[in-house]
View 1: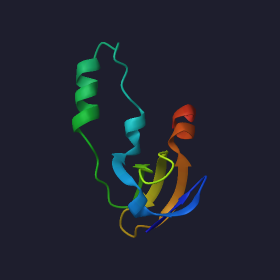
View 2: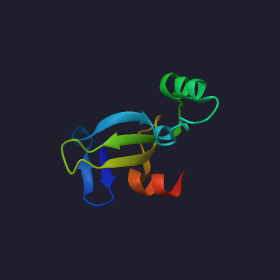
View 3: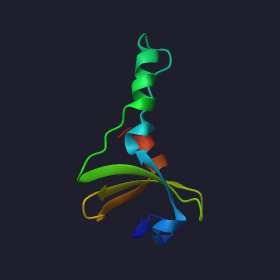
Length: 92
C-alpha cells in the first residue's frame, strides 16, 4: 500500500507505524470535573469500524512526521492524507 505523504509524495506503508484512531488527537481536559472517566474512555475505548476511518500513522522510516490518513478499511483505498499538526490546529 502506498501512502501519499503531503510533503514527500507516495511512500510505501512499511515506512510507517500505525497508531490507531485519529480521534486520539482530541485529548480530554485534565482539569475537567470528569477527567478520570474521560481519560479512561480515551485510553481504553476504541472503535474498530469497517469502512471509511481516520487513522494516525507515524513516518518512522522517513521524516518522522505524524499523518492523519482517511482510509477505507474494507478496500484499503486511501481517500485523504494530512499532516497531524494541521488537523490538530483546526481541531477536527
